[in-house]
Image (tube, rainbow, N blue to C red; front, side, top):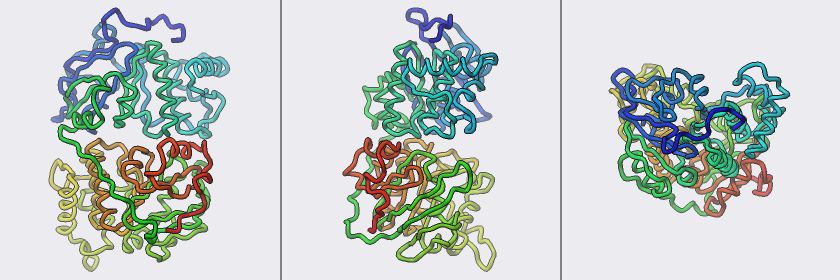
Length: 525
């Protein structure tokens, strides 16, 4: 790609990468069981599967982070043992991880230089970055500081940093999870250019429509084993999902939204919050309301005030500010989390490990943490362990939480099962208002469907659900109305059925002012 002597295509008829019979065990657990498939030069190939299906384990072996217990990896037709990530990069294998590893205070060029061999000046490196950006239409300014870039721009920095190492195979893990539709399409344009230049791409994503639109073939893993490799466009999203989970996948039925005359159950009026750290986002005059019987989606790209808003809505932050928060007409602006729960609010923060749940505590103790002030779990200061265990067991049963043993530690659950537990813990109380941030972040198709249905059922029972989410597919699947959060300001809620993902994406990215969607005008009911 940049003058390397490495050939850009393998021998005629030889796959670029071929894996056969790959097995990897961790104690008694088999993460990969006879996994194998092939990727050709220039192919965009999807790797699909639920959480725990073995995708991450497999790509870590391809990238040299783990070693297989048995099986063979072939690179350009020759058997190879990939000893480390550096060895993988030397072979021509690059990886862009889901979570960026960029220093916010450094420039683009300085971040890229940290991943390359020493000796090249920043001026020469900047020139190379500009040349590659122009060649592939990536649009990266080497002099820009990372903290001034959008999430999509930061992802392009990660891609350029990887490409400057001249990969023949590029592994991408959930690359569109924080992108607007417009940024996603720009990324796909770039990946298609790479493909035409002979670079193979292994693309990992839960977004099945994107898989069908971008990739040529898809390999599906289930519980560590190959289910099959299919032409992506030959299967519907539902068919791909059913391959992943092994059972029929039903459709989500979003019922009609409440009438416009419904009185607001939960309202925020004129909420301001000053930034408390250099990288915090101030909240600027936020006004919106959630109605009984609806799911109100709050869309936005990460870093635009979601954390600050969630803390204000849950009572984790009650500092000095302007504005009023009410539930059923009662002011709760200065009330903390326990009092808000007593008044009928349930909430689930974005980070399940350490925030929504304590990994080193049992499920019953985690149930106690959020419900100790609500009823029968504590009697005159004494914890009733039988009641907490019963509640945890009931939540696990009702929300299909698959337990490795009775009342395990939270850390023993997979991400999807722990998320089902913390969502179920709140919904099982039937709160008047349920506030959740990124409800299906990093969970598989089956768990996501279960959680979304549970939120819709809660709304149908008369509660108000406020869902903060970066996932536009999720927003459009279950929200009755949607507001957009950008740079600490919010648009007036719009009827989801009357808008488009493209419109919401432009508002999320700041390409269209929020005022054009009625920002700052609030939503009285």
